[in-house]
Image (tube, rainbow, N blue to C red; front, top):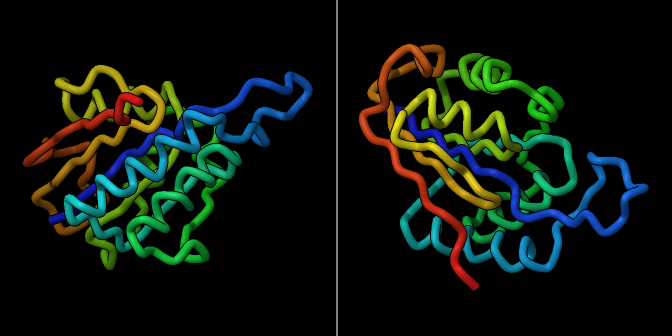
Length: 162
């Protein structure tokens, strides 16, 4: 079995229009939502063997915040340049190229590619607002099969309201 979590970064700030897009930080809501989502994942028993993140500050900050809540070492988060400004096919390719060792992977990235990929994996998932988490379980032994077989289970959860 393989478990995949697609996590859209928490709400980011647009306060500084001169700031490069990759450097945009989380806004106040994002800073509130990310730890809450991390706590919810921890309470549900989520344990990542591997965390992958886009290099964008907002995605990496979300990953680090959730990692802290899950007891995952921040320095073990793998930054994957291909996850920034990517298409869903690129995100899927990153997943399909993972080694067999990891059973549970959390991937932190952006829209529209995460919603598109989540919908492709399960048609019941149609939206992923900021800090949403889509969880998929696949009855496969290799990540290369993801996207070629239907998930055994798929859920999406949204950030808490206030």
